[in-house]
Length: 152
Image (cartoon, rainbow, N blue to C red; front, side):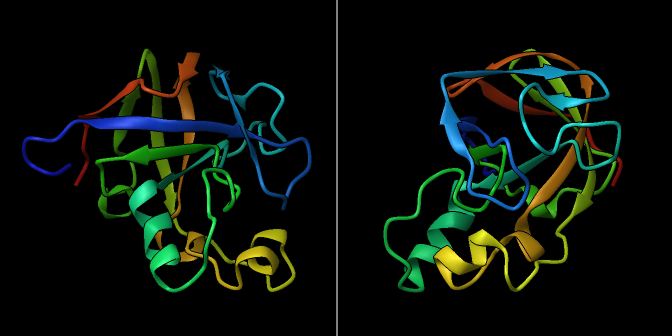
């Protein structure tokens, strides 16, 4: 996080099918060791939820891709004020009352995915973060984010 700034959840996004753009929700229920209820990526695996910073989306907009919004890169949680991709694996984040542990930074991006088709590029391979839910609860836009434990 930048000194003197407060990190926030900008948007909580879900989709019923993998590889598609996610839509913003008023709130979401995160379930321990599962992910977000109703989201295609939920399940008992290390990439239960995905996070991407609004600042990363802005980098893509600056490259001439207009009209990008939260969820366009299939991220579940869009954040502001925290450089997620610089956090080490194992970092525990408090997202409102929920807790998640970072399990992976970046991922392979498939050429034919809906995100790459829509945007022409994808920032998820370098700046997307994946996590597992270690304490569930309700999450909404505007909830604060804090680094609770950093293993690096």
